[in-house]
Length: 186
Image (tube, rainbow, N blue to C red; front, side, top):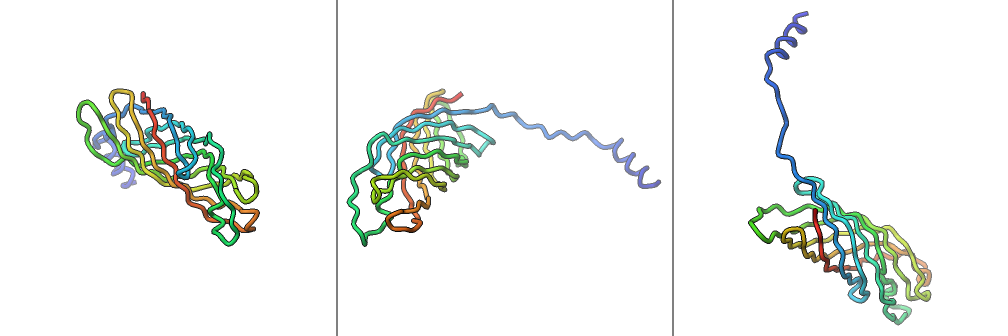
């Protein structure tokens, strides 16, 4: 009985607590531009980057190579990883914004990202057959924004494990992708 009395007194005399803070406006950016995969496949990229918290953003995007795959000479005894060419990908990559203060006018951001993807690649040893594999990715974005329009440069590295039919083994492949994009935010 004494416990109930103490609990009631504490509840009646306690102060109200509120966990209020300044609400952040939602921030969404659409980005589109040019992509270069494997330092040889030119293409286009597009996506949507959305703020989750003050420092965490999530980017969902894709790139598609529009050029035919580069001619690769298949030499047996060579590293079979040289026969694989990354062509297209879809990804979801959470990122952490490096904290800094904004001044008036032009704003800039640097974000470090890591996530997962689906990668389409081609194997030069079997007449460029398409393969689709899950992948991990890591990279960084550099963004410059004035009002609602911005420019973004992104570098990513995709790691995936396709199965080479000529080598008859699963290969560990790491291939880069660079984009230059225009952004619009609201």
